[in-house]
Length: 183
Image (cartoon, rainbow, N blue to C red; front, side, top):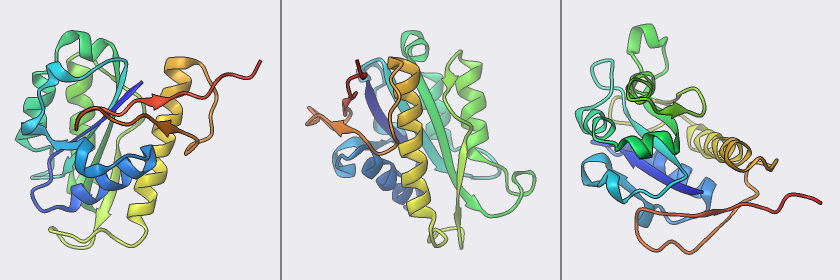
């Protein structure tokens, strides 16, 4: 199973969440999460889990993430699981909007499958920082997403955080090694 993190982070706050996601999968953020406008979807291997995240901007997702989802090949949509996240103020999504919800709808509209409901991580001010505890919460959320993906794709029950990753070959990939099923 391959894991990717594709983000939009104009102020760097979503970048902080992406680093926490990377730690949950135990690989270097610097080499494995990229802005949506720098990712060629045709290079993504399957089966994969693709984390998509960005700030809530004008109550929805940014243009780079929208364009990324619109250009995903059909085979990738069919063979991947998606997990959306956003950064926003801690208020009702009715008031603030939610980039994660818009990302999920865009993925579903293209025929993709969201593995888990979108998750929001909360900021103190528009340009950050994140509220206290949000980085750890992001890491735990991502660990749970990966555990769900392993159950879904490999029919193996694992504890969140119980993963080893291969040495990635390029910025875009990290293979999660699935523990053997008990006999």
